[in-house]
Length: 309
Image (cartoon, rainbow, N blue to C red; front, side, top):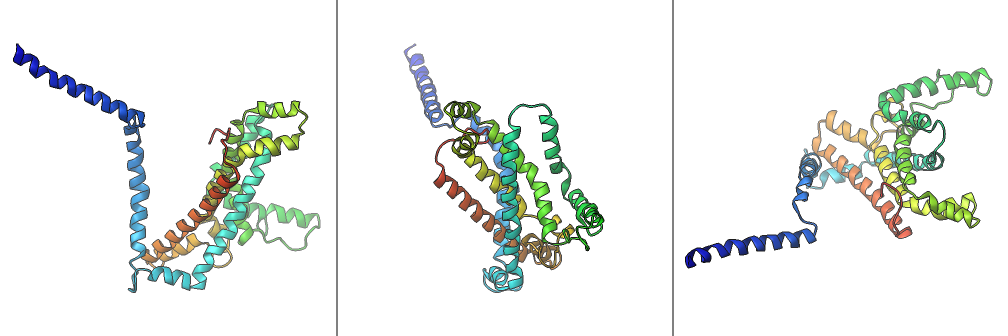
């Protein structure tokens, strides 16, 4: 019996050690629930990390030889290719700013309860379901040389010749506004809906006017949401491709950087150079996002009441 008791003590001690280890790991946030992250991590690695690493490596293998940075030297040494950066930023930055700026007052008004709110919200977000091709077709029919707008303006005698609103910079810009506004509007409406309305009511009870309530209470709480919304809408606008061809001037003012990457990959079949252009795109996007988030953290360090925070 003495021998049997001696053989049962070690398993009990081992079980106690395992329980203690699990407890210590749980205190650090490490437990079995982390396994729920595994499917997402696999997808991120397969769909983002691997393609990025593969493309990055490919960009250092120029088809025509030279050093590993030959493709980068070729891109930045060619004014025609280098100009695509400025053209894309000239489209993406104003479009993202305008989408965010236009969304704030509309979302601010729609955050309350009133009759017809759902219908109005639905109408505002419908463009997000249209797709680029339908949006471009609508723009051509509305703002083209023989579109409704030009015919109406000529009919009432305001203009003698049709306004050029498509197949140039403005066609792509309007397309980015139409497709990007619903996205920005929904994000900002979500942030605004999460801000406690009792804060504004308390300020109103102390005599603060509508502008001061918005400027001193709502806007600071909304600042993190504005920064996030700008970053997301900017990334969408910076990667513009179909609109730049359908309603833009793809050989001139709207030859954006994505068109340069497409031409390198599928017209010249120079995949290493196309990967180089894609990496440049990613670096520029990360730089702009980094600047915006750095400005946000410098200007506002508190918490936000927005749901998306």
